[in-house]
Length: 454
Image (cartoon, rainbow, N blue to C red; front, top):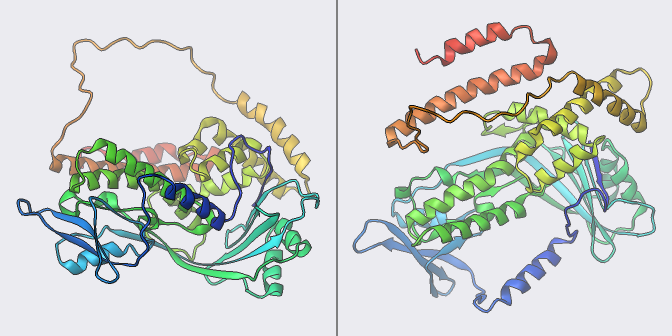
């Protein structure tokens, strides 16, 4: 899969810059706020205890190096994947429970190098993303400040890029599109090749903890909640969504106790659910990937693969894919009828081109896609005329269902069971496509498994 973004490819403004430059400006902006003071020191522990009138656990601050104590109404643990505050609370023995942990093992290794950028080299793109099929290797190139390129090559499950100049260039040459390999060959290196390893993506399900299991005055944020595969570039965006969730929780709640933490955890879990599903769906495209697989991952992976293929030939699909991966839209935006139809059309063109004995150019693929689209639309059912539904009569409508905890647990179990059946049936339907002649038999089997009589 290849995807090259030009200045006019989409309408969302963005800034291409190095991480040190971004962090410098963010830090300067925060330090300039009148109510912000920066304290430099190594945090060694949290200050926590139980209230005199309540058994609830509350974090009241942190202990710095040299036994200096810094008291606070709210402590935000943004210490990264380790989430050290959880270990400190466990050591205090106050009964707080660590959130359940999901790990997806990808054994990823990537190597990055800075190259000199020549504005007059004829390249009309600023970002290039090349992913193998299957995605066991990948490469990305970003234009940075000071006329520089940042090029990163990545591999999974032991197939890591070398750190020697010749090996690094040879690894780039194995990618299915030559854009990045040509860039490396034609550009002057400005830095050494810097490697990095990541064994697994991690997610702490803070949203699953009950209020009684939490410590008031302490929240997790950033990689402490979810640490994604960095090839997708969603870590900082997901952290920003969690910061927005924290602001929402502060506005909703009066205090900063366990109830506030519970509210924030639910919002934070909702914020990272979509990028986690996207990144994990991409990770499980490789059969060697192991770990906690969310339900529907097989279907998500299959559809994402088709969407990535379609994005190479359809600008509308590419635009929507960029918006979803940058968390500007939810993943459900890729399932909008207009987008799903384009994905299906492009996938049919790609399959036909792969079966074609003669090579097919991108222009031929595009003309085939445009001629195929009206024929597909012609086979769709026409829309019915709009009408206004009659208001209900003789019945009382409850707008909100209020249930007790045992009933809620039963409803959750039933919903999970029915959702799993529907997901399995949808996967079968997608595999069979238009040749689905077993629908009646499957419906009978589903009725037997989902009927209220069981």
